[in-house]
Image (cartoon, rainbow, N blue to C red; front, side):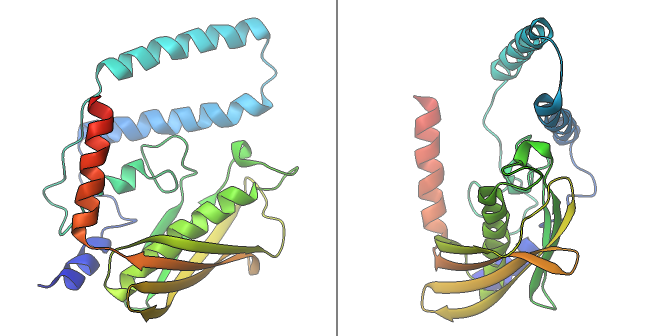
Length: 232
């Protein structure tokens, strides 16, 4: 099986968590879900200053607990051809991450037969920019995630080289949105993709991405650099 076939096999699992995640993974996702709800509640809360300070003290104490138990994550041995450092992407992604409290999270997955990335996202109150609207930067971020995932149809690993986003209508918060992305062309290492965010049948934003194909050695270098930063 060559590298492109391995890549396609790896992406079959994206958007579909393992049937039997570890107890630690489930616990992390539970904590992240509660923190996500907490973050959304802060903006609309009318709690007193005293109550807020008490909550802040409690959070500091819990952060100390987490930092005291911090350890480097091990690669998933059952993830076929996973790139170095990307084995836990579905949990840690700032866009899709089940265990990342800053993620909406978006649910995205490639349809390898139709050659389209499809998914949904619901941006809560913490993502509000203009009144009742999702901040444009987060709309661009979910497009970047979907457009990058569409690179799988080229058979290559890639990283964002450029992203153009057009906002056609306001994007409402606390509303289920639909996301689609597809491969447009491949010219050497340059991979172009396009996609949209929909509210119902209305395209509220569209994006065009330029991605640059990279080899596995590049990701290994990134992992090594990350390890050096955290060890110092």
